[in-house]
Amino acid sequence: MTLSEKIQAKSAVVGVVGLGYVGLPLAVEFAHAGFHVVGIDLNEQKVARVNAGDSYVGDVPSSVLAPLVEQGLLKATTDFAALAELDTVNIAVPTPLRKTKDPDMSYIVSATEEIAKYLHSGMLIILESTTYPGTTAELVLPMLEKSGLKVGEDFYLCFSPERVDPGNAKYQTKNIPKVVGGTTPQCTELGALFYAQALEHVVPVSSTQVAEMVKLLENTFRMINIGLVNEIAVMCDGMGINVWEVIDAAATKPFGFMPFFPGPGLGGHCIPIDPFYLSWKSKQSGIEARFIELAGYINGQMPHFVATKVQNALNEEGKAVKGSKIVIYGVAYKRDIDDVRESPALDIIHLLKKRGAEIQYVDPYIPQIRLEHETLHASSMDVIGEADCVVIVTDHKQFDYKALVRDAKLIVDTRNALKGVQSEKIFRL
Ligand code: SAJ
Image 1 (cartoon, rainbow, N blue to C red):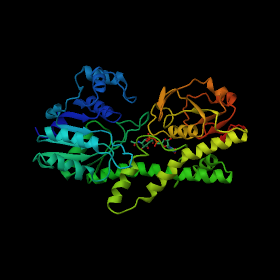
Image 2: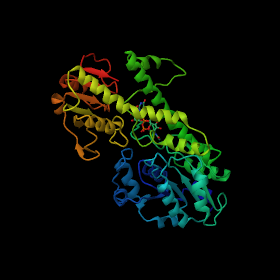
Image 3: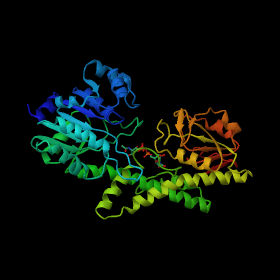
Image 4: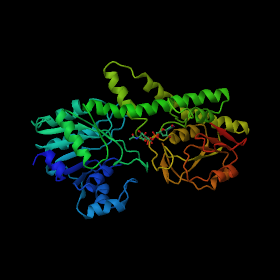
């Protein structure tokens, strides 16, 4: 049977390298569609938990995972030799930034090295990790063709951006349109056919570079618009205008406007990072990505702006930051999730501690955070009453904002969580 026939008959054995918040949901979707799926991950705990039907990804309930494992449709392993039995392989490994803001391609390279060892005729390889345009053609393809196999004839190679939005109940892997671009037209065709077996909408594009660029445009668009609205917030602060009211009123425009909201800075593992993959690559072609650099600077300045706002608010009470008890209300990088990666709360804590403040934090999703020289454990709501200032950094829905306004002496609200509440003790971004 040809690969195309195997895909349509669902007899193709599907592989997913990287069982994180992207890979595990994808593996589950293909198992759900009736494929035999083999997940490969270096992390033995993750592999053991998948094989026990015990999910560690919020968007994949164990009640969905366990039956697929029991039916033998999904299994996990740390052994890359499993690749020899696979017909398709999706790569969903991390693409972080180095400290120098240069792309860290080490995960993609090591995954591709393993795949190249076991590459055989009739395989479809699809890279999903967010990366700079050209990665698939310039980095992955040559590594795979070292085997002597020819792309578009012996094996097929595509790029398809992951668009997983953790915790989004409305849009999940199955119903988020899936863009896919191949190295050759035949690759694109097979990639599109593959995804069509398990996902609701497939969007074929003409090349891997287009598919890589689509993702970067999406997330750079977001990062730059957040930077713009943060700059507007700083302007409004200087002019004594309530930026939140301005944005809400501007959002009544039924066309040509899309609201973004100011905040304490830019967190997460996508938005602050992905655009620097684009600016890094464009610099190689001699083109300065000035919007990205500027937005990165502005978003990076927001923690400083918040620390100064706290200092000024304490000043109004005749208090110095030094020696003040400050409670950070919410440290996750965005509301209602348990991820603290790149969270601006960490920068704000660092800046206030540097000014001599005593810091505690309250966050039901985050039991502890690792600071430069210490681990801070979450406090209970009781600390609110004794604090000189409470800073709302993450506006979790489950917070009791009424109790906060009742018990806190002074509040700096960086998320407009206390929208409409009038009080001398509330200072807003
Ligand atoms: N943020 C603001 N103002 C805004 C929106 C976000 O300050 O108006 C901050 C958030 O607090 C957070 C950071 O930006 O610290 C990133 O927030 P995000 O809403 O973009 O959430 P992410 O990082 O989880 O982004 C993901 C992305 N999904 C993928 O990359 C597949 C992004 O493309 C989605 O648009 C986004 O989720 C989403 O819409 O929730």
